[in-house]
Image 1 (spheres, rainbow, N blue to C red):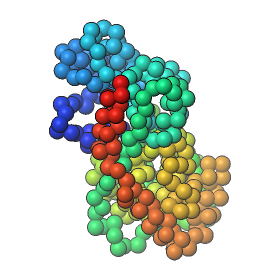
Image 2 (cartoon, helix red, strand yellow):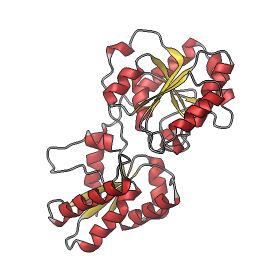
Image 3 (tube, helix red, strand yellow):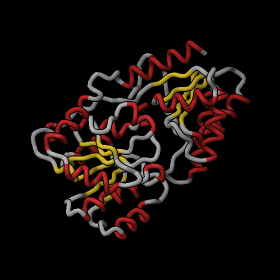
Image 4 (tube, rainbow, N blue to C red):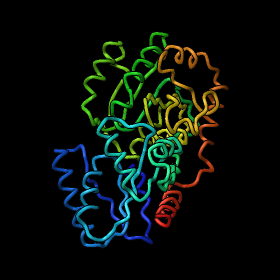
Length: 322
């Protein structure tokens, strides 16, 4: 979420984006170094509100709460409707109960929080950011079976399913391809490449590593579809971007995605149990049907409140209510 939050700098407030946790280098060193900076900043009393995100920052924040004498409002951000591990469950629940307010990126995440603490102030800020669409996206025909996906390469993204789906298309003699963009946070790329080779689509699945938003948009220009195979999601920023770009969404309907995606209307549901069924459905679709889904996908967020406006309104409500 840092990518969205860093785009929402409000000149009316003195603010600082501080990373306490990073997968680059030694995670423990990064966490300790970030904790030291956080403690120093809060001890000096120059900030009155702290917004935390993800469970590794919760222990340092608890420490600050216990050992800094002046009160600092604590807002914790929840980005999914499930917990990803036992550790995530433990510390996220602690944060939900100890924080002064909770910010969520979807209604699905809000329901999770309310089930843990129904008296806690909760606000939803949907991270929908309007994109400037390059002219290259308009006019030229696209192969809807050439897919791109972007985001963190993580177990819950279930990219094995995405690769299986590509293999099912290829088995049906389709010219299918998949470009996977994003940082490999868990060392999964060798396993994913092995899976692609096993399914005989090793030459059709490629990885770029982490790219900036501008680079992702340039990479996406020749592609016609966006493939999302996640087991869990919050709102899913990447999907909101892909829909605005006019990529055909083929997605698992999980978490916050269910709040704005409807199968057959502005997306195609990726069947987790039977990807071959989705492959057959996609190949049998007429151009008119796929064009209509893409058109409605583009329109999905055309009247949505800008994330920065939504974000600061939600924070204002939380701060005034705590």
